Each structure stands twice: as C-alpha cells, then as structure tokens.
Image 1 (tube, helix red, strand yellow):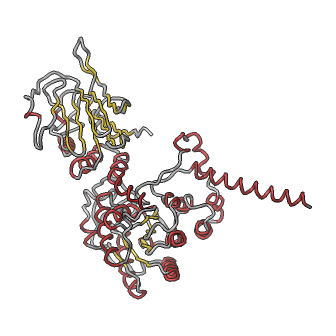
Image 2 (image 1 turned 180 degrees about the horizontal axis):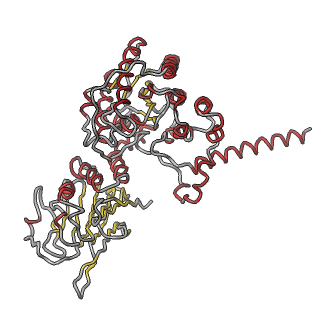
Image 3 (image 1 turned 180 degrees about the vertical axis):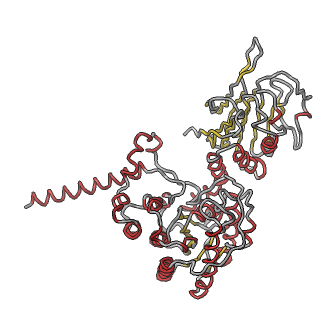
Length: 532
C-alpha cells in the first residue's frame, strides 16, 4: 500500500512538472501580437495600478497610460485588445480587481453593438494566451466564449506556436523587460481618411448580451467598491472595420447608454460626436481612420486625464518610491522609447520623416542623436521636391531632391543640426555656429563641383561617431556607393546605398533604429534593422 501511494505521489508530481513545462514552453514560443493584451501587466507586483482600462483596440491605441502618469501621476494600465468582447472585458476587470484593487475601472463600451457569440474566437487568443495559465478568469473566458471543440487549442496553445522553433534566437531566452507603454500601443503611421456624414439614429443598437455584460460589470464594481467609468472612444473617420453604418450604430448606442448610465448613476464619457472627435485631424492624427495614431492619442489622453483628475480622487504616484520609482524612470524615458517604437514601425520615407520632424526638430526628444548619410545619387522622380521639403522639416538646410552627388551627411543632436555637408567639396561640411546659420555663411556654394564622398567625426554624449557617405577612388576620383556609420567602434550602416538614418540614445549608446531608404525607387520604402 505504501508503494502504491508513493507511486501515486510521484505520478502527481510528474504530471504537475510536465504541465508546468508545457506552460513554460507556451510562453517561450508565443509571439506577442501588436493587437493583443500586453503580458507585462502580470509581471508587476499586486496593488500597483489605480486605474485599469478594459475594452477594444480603439482604447488600446487611443489612451496612453504613460501620458496620464507624466501629466497627473495616475498609475494606470491598458488591458485592451483587438475586438475584445464585453464578456472578456468583465473577466479582465475581475482579474484586475483581484490583483490590484484599483480605484477605477474604465470600460470601453464600443463593443456593446455586438453579441459575445458573434466574436471570432481567434481574437480571444490575444487575451487568453497571455493570461496566467491557471487564472480562473482565463478559464472562464475560454469556457464561456470559445466553442467547445476549440478548448484544447486555447487551454494548451502550444501546437499553435510549435512551428516557431526554427525562428528562435538567443534573445528569446532572455528575461522579458517591462515596456514603458503600459499596455497602450503607439504608432507614428498616418493615413489621410474620409470623415463621416451626420449619423442616423438606429433603435436597439445595444445587443441584449451586451446589456447583461454591462449589468455584470456594474455589479462587480459595486460589490468590490471599485468606481466604474464608461468610455465611448472617438471614431474620427472611416476605416477598415468601421464605415458609416458602424458609426451610426456606435453613435446610437452612445445615445442609449447616456440614459442607462444616468439611471444607474454611472459616469459616462462619450467622445462620439464630441468636440474632441471633430477636432482630430484626419490628415495627421489617425493611422487607419477609426484608430488614432500617437498624435491623436495625445489629444484624447490629455482630455481624459483632465476628466479623471476633476471627477475622481486618484493618488499622484510620482516620486513615491517602490515600484513607482521604476514607473518614474519609464516616464522619463517615454519620449525616447515612443520615438523608437514609432520609427521601427515606419513602412515608408513619408512616415519616417514625419516622426523625425516631430521628435528631432519640432519637439526634440532629449538624448536622441540622428545620424544621416546619402550614399547614392538621388533620382528626383523618386525623392521629389515635396519629399525633400518634408525632410527639410527636420532642420537641415538642403532639399535633397536637387542633390547631385553622393557626399551628403547630417548630424542632429538633441534637436539641433550640428553638422551638414555643403556643396563645396570633400570635407567641406558646415558646423552651425549659431541659430539660423546656413552653409552659405561658411563656404561659397558650388553646385557644379564634382562628385565627392564626405566624412565627419564627432562626439555626442557617450557616442563617438564616424560617418562616410561614399567611396572615392584615389586615382580616378570616381565616387561609388558605400556608406559607413560607425558608433563606438561598431558599424550600423545597412547594405546598399540610398539615404540611411541611424538614431541613438546619446546617454546609453543604444540604437533606436537603423533605416535605409532606397532613393532610386518610387515607393521610398524603409528597410529597418534594429541590431537586436
């Protein structure tokens, strides 16, 4: 009998260890999707966050917790994900209340127009795959929202990621660091979008299952003494997922929710049809119509922050020590990290230039150093005058669309151009002595001068850099493509010529982004390499 019990105990221990190994492999092989719940939340100590957001991708992109912390000291986390059903929002709110006992849950109500049962279960992977495997709330999301025949896939998603073995690198084995966006997603992508017509009211826009979920969330917050704010995010323009009919539904639901919230005594902040929504620039502040980009998110988050500050009693956690010392550091690094994330996500020259204009000139990011080199001739039909003017917004003096040779280099340190090549010849770059100086102030321009390759060396913070813009043959004096960007002894130029841009943290020497733009192709696409 004793042997039997020993074997039972050994078997149970083996099964437990095997389950733990499988769960660890799940986490190891899993890819973090840009539309998914941020798993960093579950790495923070309990009782860290005073405000937690749950809901859809409109809030995930539109509300930036770090902006709230920088402005008001509000410690918040964004637990939103793409197409998050209200039932899942309920269980995420419950998870947050159990972990953090937050003062406030902010519920994005955009999904009240959809039934839980209509949700494509693949969107639930964005949530359940990153939650603690044995969380009761994770289990309830799966059992209540996922078809029974897919339960195995959701409880043990290892086979979904098994093909990733061949993609693994040594960086996958390193401990995951906390990202300074606190669940918010940021993008510098811009797409000009078409606005909506005046909405038409649609009766019964809120589905019956959504009403049940709202009651459940309301009861949860009342039972736990947690304040609840209903939030209807702005939808500034037509996009891939929301057209005029979708906007009509959301606007109608917001009208109905106003009456429900008043009856229940729940605060409701609706941006649908508001001045904030109409004030979002659909040429500059949206990334795909319905979602705002980083510039639109700043506007919406600033307004929401003022509302939270005026209507709720929330502590200012800045400078209070403990885990908030880490958040203080993230707040200080936020502009640099946001610049990094936005640059690495840029698909084309236009978006790259937009971000650099903002972060390297208009509101220069502290500790950002931008190194630029042109290593091949410009095809003016590709990088035209308009594109050249966009790049000039960074602070350089030259419209590169009319540049005739290889040898152009620029260095921008903390928002100031500290070096830019003049036309006069090799080594004839100019270093601005004072604000407003230009190449003509230091050397006579000679646009008919022969092609040449320029070179500059210098120091910025902890960076010792050396940049060359081409290769010159000593005998023939012919210049060929060939950029080198060397920082602290390491090379960062990408293969090929074109216009190359490398951005560094001047205090740490870390690379934020390395980008090559082929100036001989009309699409001017960006090739990135982050040298991870």
